Image (cartoon, rainbow, N blue to C red; front, side, top):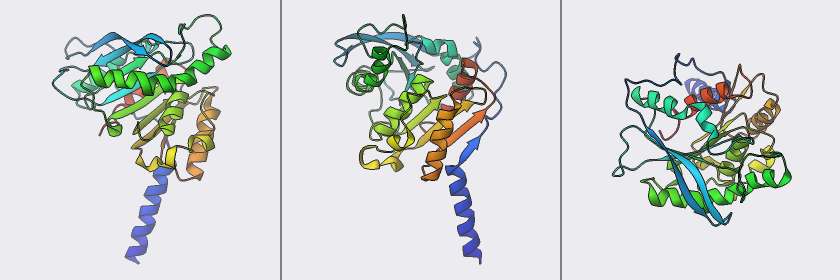
Length: 276
């Protein structure tokens, strides 16, 4: 009888994890504001050669308080939305969010890379941002990321070059990229976060066609969406399919829209879970 109860408890906890659909935990006031009393990290602009695009491209790199080239760090690749570029995440106060979490001992020291996810010669967010060539450039960024940006970061920064030390996350269009690229390359990334993923997200049955379907190697699949977000059907569709097919994941649904208030909260929670 005791053995049966233990088995039932295990199944309850296991499938409860598979179906995890919860709200955010409370966030302290001022979590995204500067604090002069704590150590701060840095955000710098880098330029890297892209063989995929055939030109030098830009990205922002956040290094944590106390950063030292003599230490080794895991790396989070943090992607923007369809109307943004490498600068867009600055609207989400990533340095302020991370600095406070470091001061509170709630995150693992990490490097955060914020690239331009529009892999084309003119990668500015100008004109018709929904034009076919610009949308296709977001898909092409997978090759730029894998073949050009990651090797550059791991050459010029003290980055740990193992899958368990790489994470990918993003907002909206970048959320779709994160699910597409992360689940499509489980040998490269172990941690995946998607904040309000957009319709560029591949259909769930396509997402699960990763090489060798070796998704059990992933440490975390985590996505979130606001209840007032018009794109919530994308997240619901993915969640329901994953749940049906036993893919372990976390799905956060809470008050909010398709905006930086929600994405900042998503970043705040996601970074506390990775590289543990």
